[in-house]
Length: 103
View 1 (cartoon, rainbow, N blue to C red):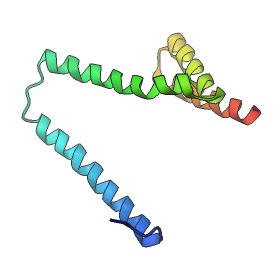
View 2: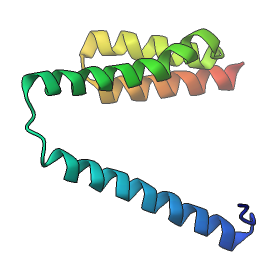
View 3: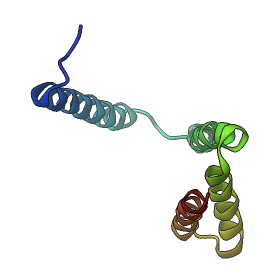
């Protein structure tokens, strides 16, 4: 199956991706409404969130460019100092942009 990359095709792809995202999000909420969240399930959910972040960050740490390494370093340091994720992420983005601009 192929879809043309004209305006109609691109909009169709965006619509399909939007629908798939909505179905998975609402489907997850619907399914979880029937599951009692025990401490074991809660710890599994917390572990999954961490493992997803690690799966994204580790390859970037080993194979990323100087901007990626600067972003990871600055984000980690700012997070350790102020313990708030949003400013740490913003600082990491700024560090990556600055390093990539200067190099």
